[in-house]
Image 1 (cartoon, rainbow, N blue to C red):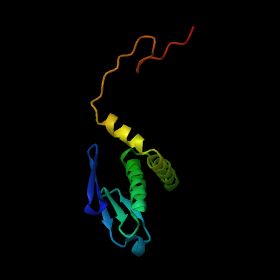
Image 2 (cartoon, rainbow, N blue to C red):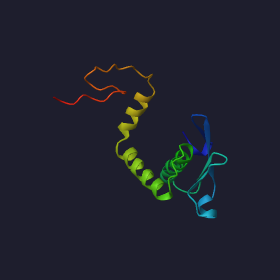
Image 3 (cartoon, helix red, strand yellow):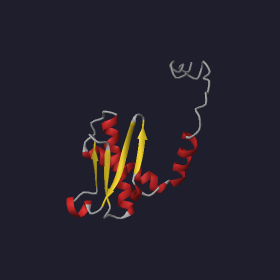
Image 4 (cartoon, rainbow, N blue to C red):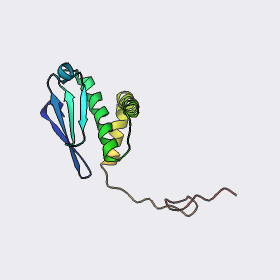
Amino acid sequence: MDLRSGIGITVGSWTIKVHVVPNLSKDRDLYGEWDPDNRVILIAGDICPQDQAQTLLHELFHAASTYCHLELDEQDVVGLENFFAQIIKDYPALITVFLEYLSRPRAFYPHTPDSGGPHEPAKPDA
């Protein structure tokens, strides 16, 4: 996927458009921006690809905050951005696991009465 071509990210009923804007960093001193009214993420075209990727992650957390009514502040978003960027960078095999498992249909795993299913508390040890 190349950010320069523009992408649409669909989450639930939302489609978030991502646009790379030439000179956004130089002209407006921004690496990125989330526009919740239009559901658009702008990414600076005049920063390196690594910064573009991290900025996209950052702006997606702003979008998630809007979508989920989380009211995250900038410090919260920066913390999440750095936390997940570090995981993605240091554990790329984990991304493969997520892609493999999350693309499968959900399987039903029955719970035994002693295991504590999703709607009942686990029984304490005697």
